[in-house]
Amino acid sequence: MTLLINQKAPDFEADTTIGRIRFHEWIGDSWCVLFSHPKDFTPVCTTELGTMAGLEPEFARRNCKIIGLSVDPVSAHERWSQDIQDVTGHRPSYPMIGDSDLAVSKLYGMLPADAGTTSEGRTPNDNATVRNVFMIGPDKLIKLVLSYPMSTGRNFAEILRVLDSLQLTAKHKVATPANWQQGQDVIITAAVSDDEARQKFPDGWRAPKPYIRLVKQPTG
Image (cartoon, rainbow, N blue to C red; front, side):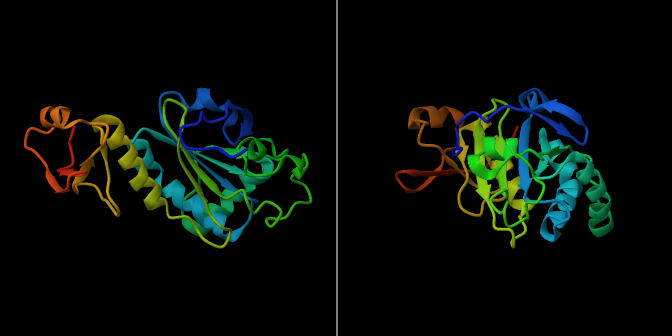
């Protein structure tokens, strides 16, 4: 199964480093970033988990929870956390899902159904496809799916940028252009008529083309 944007994020129960959770219940009315890993004690993933631990206050400020997943039991995650702190200076306080039976990886389409039912004996190469980022809204719909190769560490500043863009869109019916950063001009979405746009943006907009209406980033 391939998960697509605007599909409902599959719900599940799983053991994590903070205890057993039901995923949708744990998300509550927050945004969520679920990011996955093919194996504990792997070098690139160690740096990623520590980077996310350092950025957790930024995600919290945006009402976004972080949860990690790795194809190993929770007991291994707890040992790995010490290595993550040693290497990066940050110890994850967000939950890490134990997926030793591969159930969540299969549910999210990261491993095929015939991958087996245990993480034992599997190498990172066996789990190479478990390298995804899913951003999920408070409505439990998938807003973003990114897949990375094992050799490339993820850019979590970009994940924050996407979160800012999505939240801005949800509140103000605007889209963000290429390489947009906070404070830069945004685009009025095509779903907003000119009449509605005049009410929402009384100062008007720039239109380099009839279908591109640029305005200052809304605040509030």
